Image (cartoon, rainbow, N blue to C red; front, side, top):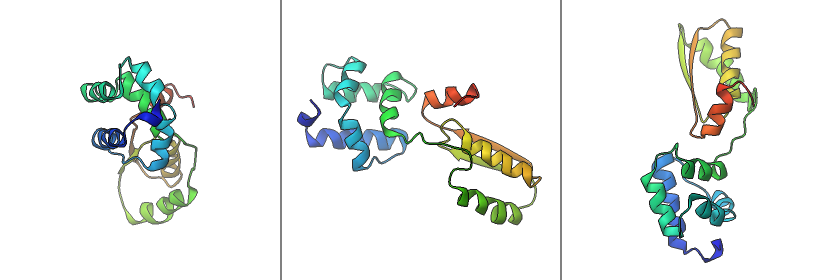
Length: 149
């Protein structure tokens, strides 16, 4: 039961997430993980919480153990023109200030709606752009590659 997991174990899990993924999980994220940690440990086939940590250490981010854990940590929210003020800033300030082709990175792109929005805006203003869209959730990348959300 997750309530029996020692507090230092949660620190160890948070450290692994920060080191491997580059995210520092907040308390609310860890509470979300706490509600499913026993299921995650069982799904991974680990006999206990410490073995689960060792299993995380032994595998890369594409491994099912990491991908399943990440589904509980990542926001995964995405939509076209999400946070419109940021795209408006891009349109009115950034694209006007720079000449020539652009390369943009949409980090944590989920299924790609924000990256696609970036392409739309650049096309509207007649700018050539190369867009790199990345995410660590393989299920999101698979959906993006298939053009479905």
